[in-house]
Image 1 (cartoon, one colour):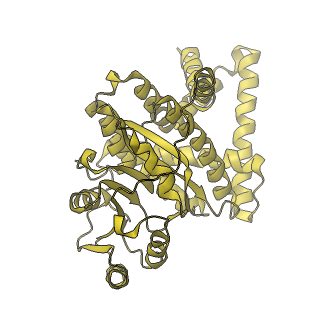
Image 2 (cartoon, rainbow, N blue to C red):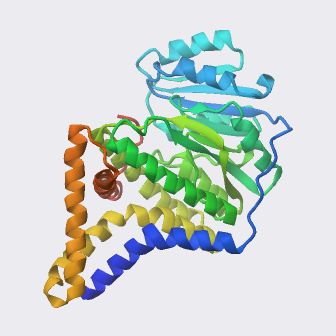
Image 3 (cartoon, rainbow, N blue to C red):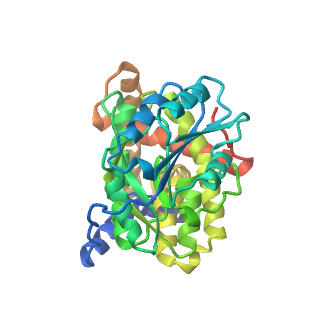
Length: 381
């Protein structure tokens, strides 16, 4: 039984972090890719939804960024939806509304969470397409030109842009997060090429308004709840790597831990419920990508624990297990040294990667426990 646990744990970890990506790469190489659509020459009406909670620092520059998009301003509606903000967010939004008539302010005095705010804003939006974003995100001027051509295909329900983090050099946390996101970006590109992409990026996600389904749970979010709903109804989610958006990552390991814990507690439960609610077993390719790309990654910390524990118990049974435990010890030692280097402001990749992989999965483990043991948080803290 212990050997079985060891090999199952090792097999799942190897598959999740190496073999799944290799399988996608191989299948993409064996079949023709979908060509990138030309730049958009049509101008559908787009409603940009910015769910804002105490975003007075970023709101002005965000609206200026949206105003700079190379797109017909008469075809853009910007909805600033305040989720119980207690700072100057609403006052600044009203000021921006006076200077640009495309801005509309939705002031919800009670904090309810992104799901409720997005539901209300989507209902009031006048555009043919809904573009969800955050106050801190910035778009390239041609962002819409690379997103909108995909909607010429009636089978496409949503298109996700590409996030680039601007402060990767700030700490070992941002360095590792940037490397992790490049892996994520590669997987999404391959999944999109194969038509099995099941998720998007909530800060740069565009979808057809008529396909928006009000989210039922307060812990749902558009980047997994809405996309799972779309693919469950037979539509396609695509990734547009040339539609660039920019954001930053917190350089603090403590802040990153809190954010990951909260997001995991919400996302894991929502994805589980979404897979069953959308009956994804009717689309095996989508189900394969959702389980391999998301669920197994979230479950990684539990397989890491079972792998290490079973390896320790099997240490005396053969040379393979002794070498395996030695390699694990070296990995966790490097993670410990990486934590010390982070405190000192150093960021060597050889230590930063194992350190952040360990704390990432520690956060995920606590997030899953929280998400399954009690109702996940629905509002920002």
